[in-house]
Length: 164
Image 1 (cartoon, rainbow, N blue to C red):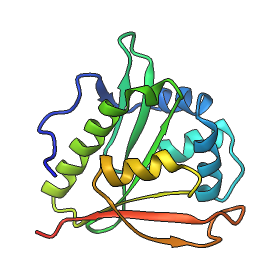
Image 2: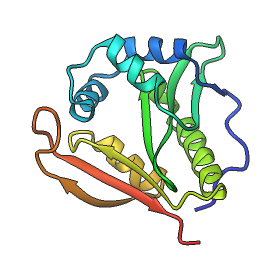
Image 3: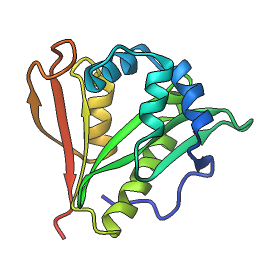
């Protein structure tokens, strides 16, 4: 897979206000996934604080008026391994091509900077996210953690490894 050499034109640095607005507009399936992975009930304040506190590169895509469409990034887990995160609105995901380009641009930069593994997780009910991890980001499904989530949800793990 070839990584983009430049980000989409509507990519901006992720700010706390972007995350707060998006948490208020977050899709229901993303709220369910947040609960499964955060091990706490969804709340706008809790989700905002969680996403804002993640380290690593983060981006936001905005509409022509500067309103956030989605925010995402990768947080470091251990040296060379990064976990993806993202939140968006229903309207934001209509821009999936720009979201994919931005995500792949960040991935390319992380691999160029020495990352050996980039990974993402989702609950099995998010079929569009599963396809996006596979086809959009070129990640492989590595396995499913059964009954892992907050409410006993299964958790699917995807990764792309830099082989050198």
